[in-house]
Image (cartoon, rainbow, N blue to C red; front, side):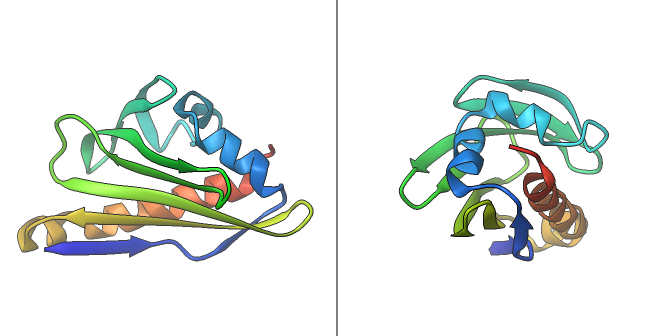
Length: 136
């Protein structure tokens, strides 16, 4: 079954181009994500691996970059407990005033959903907050 997790729309005091440029290269994300939330971070421009407490090991690779729409789409990479897609949408409403939203869609069975939904929602919310609060 497909399950969708969405963050609230967050306000970032940065222009959308700067946010997009940062998110389009995994090597930049280690400066955004709080080190106490994600462990064992390794990255190239197009892939990353990390672990999250209560969820375990995960890997991402960039599936699509759209500089015009300021959207980066990521997908599961490697051995993960379930397949998922994660994307970050950014919209500039004024200079140095952008909106950020993080969405994760996952394919998981009902038992897995029951076990990890709360943790995944916390991860999506944490990521949206971290992106919005970062100084670009």
